[in-house]
Length: 92
Image: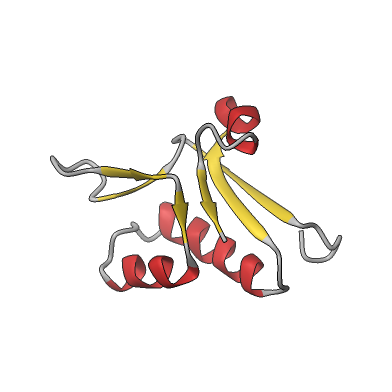
């Protein structure tokens, strides 16, 4: 996405949104995350290595690479809705 100078990176995964406390009683699905929130959740080990962590890190890297860039993490099935901000997790 950086090489083609895209404005938005879409990362497709098995879930519609990113969650904290995934699989726990207090699981929370996230509509948006700032870079600072991403960093905090990573420090709190909220994202599993080899699963959501590399997706969040890639999204952060893209967003930081140029002002105005955004990243979206969602499922293939919900990609259209996510681009319309009806689901998915946007990182800005």
